[in-house]
Picture 1 (cartoon, rainbow, N blue to C red):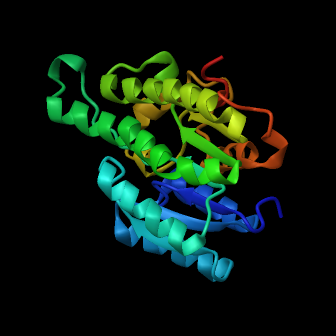
Picture 2: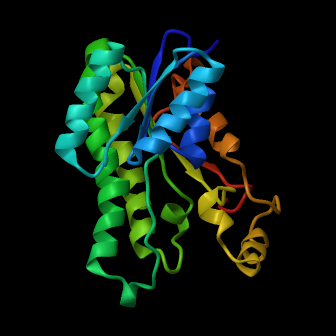
Length: 247
């Protein structure tokens, strides 16, 4: 198993892409800290993992935008697991609307969760990785951060920021044996995309050369590769998993 005896921390792991990532790591032998803002969702994912792979998961609840709360959580996770090998920053939110109508609250909520939250988690765990002189950090971006998307000024800006943050962290930590990369999903079949009207779904599919939405497992597979030993010489990169939408 690729991740036997390793510890993975996955934020936003209560559902969707994060849920698939947490299950992927557990299926390959990792112990998983399942982190979600919603405690019930975190518990459900951890319970599912433990039913399949006894004792490999523990649930935690935190708002990643809260710097002090994330620092406290990191202390608890490091106390529970003794180390961290993989950090996946997947927690994210959307508050869509045209820029001329977007409220300050909607801007701040998205940027604070998606960008500041990613920074908070990296800062909270990087010292442990530096001490070990090893680690993998994978941040979940979006094709919206690469190409923009009307009605998502806040989301696109936050995900573009995640890419810049990733490249900076990659440069800062490379000499310590730590890699930092981005996986940028395209349109993935999750609860978030399920609510889109059929007309919108068909319009989106028309922009995708592979003519379909991706699956959460597609993202999990890419994340697992970047976390593996095989990707040890890859850092500061953005891997788009989007059916060819951005090329």
